[in-house]
Length: 244
Image: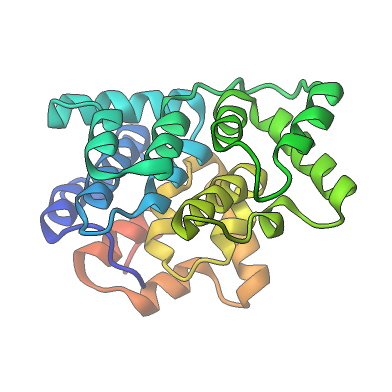
């Protein structure tokens, strides 16, 4: 299992693991805040962590994480992203982190048709791509992605297969995966700790069922097998399972 939090971070979080069901929201936000900071402090910043937090969390959750980040580090999350990243990846990360996506189901077919065309091809305008991904609702974006596949015969993820900056295109694909099908994105991940602490309490049960179907082993058994000590206890507490 991937190790994402520092020993100090784990120690802070596991002090309250027994009562996590009562304070799930605040504890999870503390985890996301720590993960974001540690991801940015790496020699090569882990943009995937930032994308997961920005693109899978609800608008209110993301706002709460950003507030917690600023309170703890005396800087905004966007400020640190600007300091530790560069180029198009910086523009993309700051844009999706700054977004407050409408959370409803409405969409505009005409807009989706037009913007699916903008997203096609390696000669597209990067500023326009970032604008679309950071200003449209997730429902709108998913309709746009479907139009892209209908028009061009392949998914947008396959269409964004490379370019001048492979890291940037990889980040774009991660944004799209997290928006279009977050459960499928996480079901393919091997770092279970990252999966568990990124899911919300309300959809963790659904993910547990999906994980069991895909891997023929329960998420609880996988955690028990691949982790140990306080971190194991913390992850099992998030899953609502007693270590004993």
